[in-house]
Length: 175
Image (cartoon, rainbow, N blue to C red):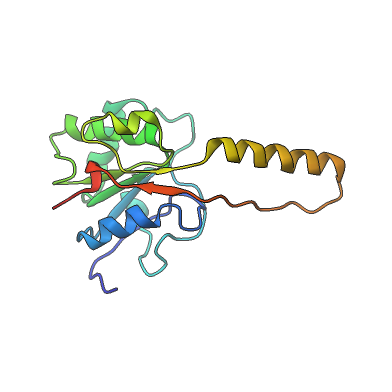
């Protein structure tokens, strides 16, 4: 895939969890993707470099629920990315509020995606593209890993992966 000017940052160490919404946005000519509240991990699209100037990287104490603060951070970017991928739906919904506050149309001027699959993602305007995570399954797996670790304290740590489901909605449906 040849994309002339690309900048993408990382969102989670999700091994493909966000690749489908990302692929949808790239295919819709989203040349630059900005990510909020990043965690470290493998690049979503290794051929697309990370541009930290198009990211909002902060600790959990940062006021991600404040649309004024988010709008300020967005306006500080040297250029507006075509899409923002947020670490969760909560932040994505607040980002959408900030974008509307500064007069940007979603998805016509900027696309937004979240991660969680919360109920709120289906009722915001426009509806939010997200990645559904199997919360109950994750809880069971975490309990199993913890109980196994307690029973076998010398055992090496393990990595556990779960399947996720992209839910493509209006916030990335650029025509």
